[in-house]
Length: 278
Image 1 (tube, rainbow, N blue to C red):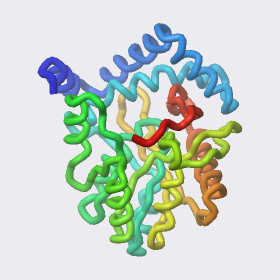
Image 2 (image 1 turned 90 degrees about the horizontal axis):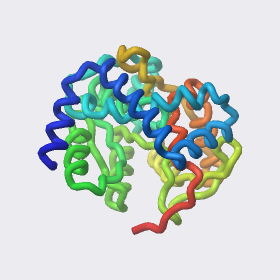
Image 3 (image 1 turned 120 degrees about the vertical axis):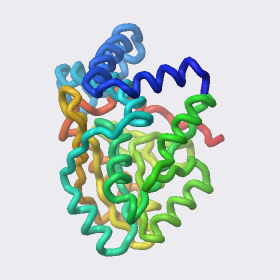
């Protein structure tokens, strides 16, 4: 990692969460005001989903907080995490089957995996799928942050997918962001808030691996830097037809977003055309 960036991340990781969230709010609004493209996308996506301008404007600061909190989550002391629905995890694991967590770009999705690893990972580790960053310094930082006790990382390659399937068949846990646009050929078009979005089929493939139990979850960012609350909801059964399953998953993600639409990442280019697989 480049020394100046390393120093900055480590310095920010020492700051209290309320301070980081305040800085993030400023960062979010600066990005919104300075980038017309960012501004148009965020407002258009929130409107497409049927939410008011009040929700869209509230999401601007939340998007900035998403970035500013990362140094603390990756390098700093643990933060406070409350749970809503932890009993669903305990019940699923008691059955001995693998568990697939589906989490949208809502709230702090980084905390959902960390919180699981801290509370449940000693018994059943979670494996998350992620695309390594292009910048070498950021790639090393992310890899170190996501390889911790109870938490494993799998690359977005065929070997990584095999790692996820193996984990589920072994009764372990997998975490996935199903509203992430996959490469061309690895998804199908399915409605998301009333507009077709290219939706990954990997979620359904994993869900049908060895009697896997599906849970949906998201990490709520509490006000004034008080920490986070991880919400867990039941899901299923999932249709065996790929198109129907994609619609079901998108509907489940919509339901989670409606719980707190101001914390959804509306600036994410959810409706973009897929890029060729490299």
